[in-house]
Image 1: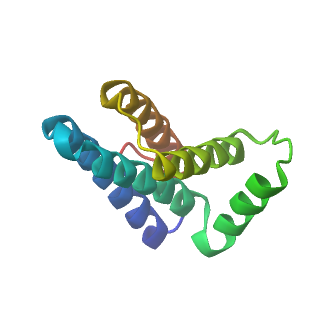
Image 2: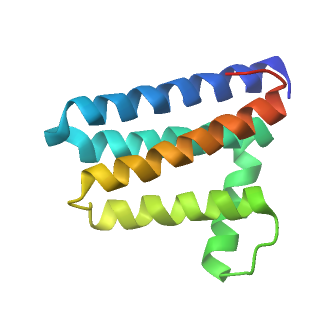
Length: 121
């Protein structure tokens, strides 16, 4: 990954972690912070893989055609997109459980960024 994309991937990952921390500290505003954390984790992966302008359409097409996905990272991106769409339509009331799930997503995102970026983030 080139320096430009690596910089954006690391930045979005850092921001996703900050959004999750904010959600934990301000439960009454958690829904918005959780959405932002997921969106930024997704963006971090997009930048790790290449140009988001090329990757986003692939994810959306895969999601809308409901294709079986054997590629693990593409499958993960499709699952994040599904979660974002579901969350946008009906935010969950169990913020604690949702924050744990988002934390797991961010941890996996961190591994992807590290894998493609070549260093710890």
